[in-house]
Image 1 (tube, rainbow, N blue to C red):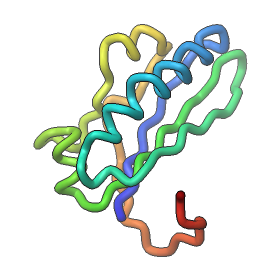
Image 2: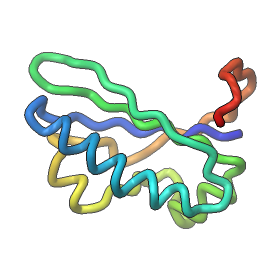
Image 3: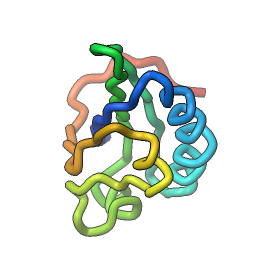
Image 4: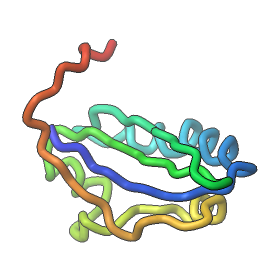
Length: 106
């Protein structure tokens, strides 16, 4: 399994908007891709803004390529999402999962 990590910063006033967008738009789009295994949206408050971290789980790098294209290290950020963010990382990181004790998802 591969985890794809992406980070962004959002003003606290727009946090709920981004979370709603993630649930309504991003998750269904990802869920339609063969090899997508799930996602986590994390948050941490820092000096009046919220850092968000998106971790997506994939069966393989080939599955990620279906989502991100050949430039897999570049972040995929739709304009509607970018408009809600104060800033975001242009590049992502990929990690191979070596040990995972998470319970199986239903």
